[in-house]
Image (cartoon, rainbow, N blue to C red; front, side):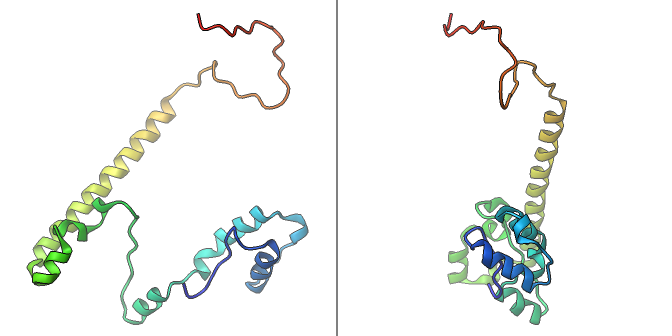
Length: 151
């Protein structure tokens, strides 16, 4: 990275110093480290930069970052064996092939979105179960009907 932004490993005083250097008006005596890191998350897009992004920008290119461990979202994975193709000839991948690969990836991405929306709808339709109660603090139930048997 060209410019480092604070992480959880940074000491609170260094995080405060970084925020102040970026023009943030904060009172460190009123904020815990986690609060400061939330401010960092809000500001991070303004100050995070990778050297490759700057090189690409100078060349009028854009770097596309793909999620790790999802080969189905990476068109290059669909070229069968990239190393093999590179050794034989990269021009074996025709523009029509590449367009097909990208179309396939877009379809796969849409499937992920569809599943996300279906899950959201299913979760929203679930009715709360009164048997599942999480109490924090002292219990108001003094019935004493606790049964430790598994009959």
